[in-house]
Amino acid sequence: MPRITPARREANRAQIIAAARRCFARDGFHQTSMPDIATEAGVAVGAPYRYFTGKDELILEIAGEAFRLIFDPIRRIVDAAENVTAADLVEAAMTRVSGDEAADAAGNTVPVDELLRCAVQSWAELLRDEGLRQRANTGFERVRGRVADALRAGQRAGTVPAELDPDRGSRVVMALLHGFVLQRTAFGLEDTAGFAHEVRLALRDASVLKLNEDRRPDGG
Image 1 (cartoon, rainbow, N blue to C red):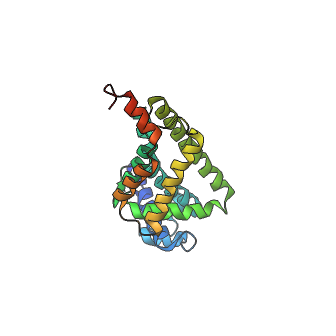
Image 2 (cartoon, rainbow, N blue to C red):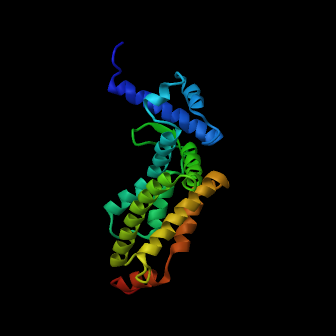
Image 3 (tube, rainbow, N blue to C red):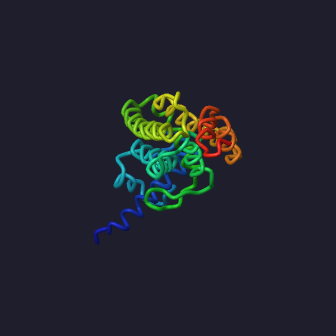
């Protein structure tokens, strides 16, 4: 039997991930079995085990992709600018998941709704699986640390209130993003542009506006 090429192997793996994502989004993690995933993918029952040890590994893969989709824009904006605001960080992540489709890490087109449904379900899994919770917490703290660094940079640039505690403020930003994902997925939030606009208004700080006005050459 000829050996499978790396390209073919990667395509097979992506096919199984896509099938699992559809099953999880439609039926939930616990109502989906590995044979269900194989059937959805149109492969032999044992084929998924050539790429994944089991369903938990698939859950990790798909949940990780969902959170990369949300948080990668934050990493990019932090790397690109030093005068960001808390609202900039929230809006950057929201914009990425406001459409119907997005690209995963491998460049494959994926339905955003499927990814976000899996993300919301994964939060419940953190309560029953300590290993999963620890892995998720590591990723959460990594992103939260970047957000806190961005807020500190914003304080130096005058775009973030000096009185804000960056570490606590980073949790506020993360909470807004998690709340947005939950509302978009479970509670029918469709006006993401309007949501982003209200986030900007809600996070606007009078002391920052006054500081920026005072820095203008004409004072007006």
